[in-house]
Image 1 (spheres, helix red, strand yellow):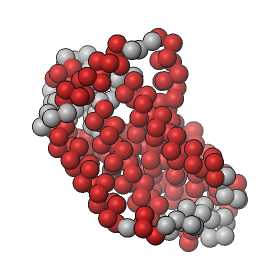
Image 2: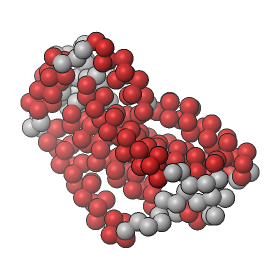
Image 3: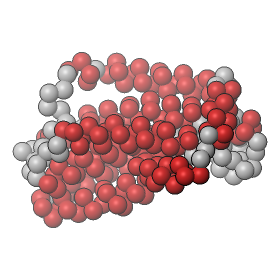
Length: 229
């Protein structure tokens, strides 16, 4: 089998758990400030700007690009077909592990925080923006805005997709493609979710900290030993 090559050439300093701790602290600070309303004015200002600068021609492309973080697309369009292709090539049950790891990390990573925070979306039609932005709004029909699941998805599903692609192709993914698929989707989904008023700015900022933390957990899995050369 082919090694996805995640760990080769990586500086040992970046493997330190101190970075993971800093990401969790940043997530906690962002969550705390948003929960007590310190960031409400910023979130409302960004929402207002997006509403005022929302040309019709840009919405369609933004919706399409936002699918880079859509869970069902990442699972059914990319992960499952690549898992089947890798299974046919290798005949090894271990090829289900990258997709399973992404599914568990994304779900159990963001899910509890979404349930706890009870925040409505900036596009809410049930409440005015100054109410929708608040945490602990159990009266909202939708109260799963914080943090952005789409952004979190980009940090864990695309590494899994790249792992499976390397296995299915029996060779490492070219560096430029790998770098784009690791950095491009988070940036694209961050911008589009805010532009489309799917999420508040702080939803996405918290998702970046959480997503990076979860991505680091994914990369700590010894894929080079699970899928040796």
